[in-house]
Amino acid sequence: MVMEKEKMMEEERGIVVAVDESEESMYALSWCLRNLLSQNTKGSTTTLVLLYVKPPLPVYSSLDATGYLFAGDVLASMEKYTNNLVNSVMKRAEAVYRDFNTNIKVEKKVGSGDAKDVICIAVERLGVDMLVMGSHDYGFFKRALLGSVSDHCAKHVKCPLVVVKRPKYV
Image (cartoon, rainbow, N blue to C red):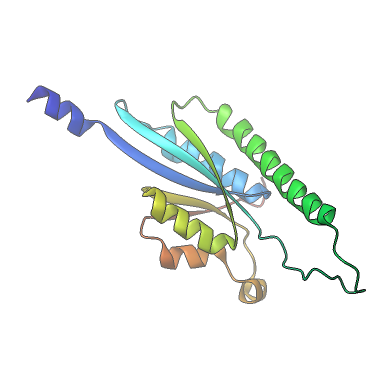
């Protein structure tokens, strides 16, 4: 009976934080650590999933505009660039969570494609309890033209979503 109570009290939860090159996403990660994970209760296990979405490589025909064959090294260079970008973002994120004294498990996941779709699919597949994202704070016109990843996720994810707006003075 005592063993069952202990198991019931032990709670597992998962939080996905969408990270990218922006200061807004690093601020959202920092906010999550300060406000959601610093109060990590004893006996509770939290997994923090850092999710980066690489944009899809542009689709080109085998011929460029001048009619010459596209060299494989151009595509390899583009892939190398995106991999370097992933490593850079994850190192920045690591520097943010390393400064916090929380005892959490951190996983790094990288997807590729349209960010709004990849984030929603990842959240569903991972079965996490919460999604945290930064807000780029686009104005009405820019948001209307580009769309909003957080708006899309708010409509499609089945878990709570926290959109963190970075203060202007930070």
